[in-house]
Length: 119
Image (tube, rainbow, N blue to C red; front, side):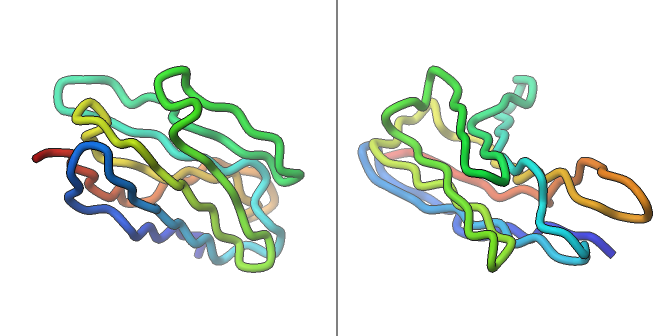
């Protein structure tokens, strides 16, 4: 069974930092692309950052120069280092990964982790 398990959310003051982790398991291949999305109350889920299996990245304009996505293929884990956090970064953050399962590549989601930026 394929699953994604996230960790690292919490409460942080404006200007602070957090690191999110997401471990993928259950597939015989390393994940294809992996990423982080977020959803604030009343808003649609939006892409924050994405990374391919070879390490190419892309970011939402709102987080460029503040957030860094990385991955460890040996551990099937993707990370999101978030610096200079702002109140508008408050959201539930979801990990995503395209993984091989039951004969094909499919998109999977984690359960979400809350990030709250507040003084």
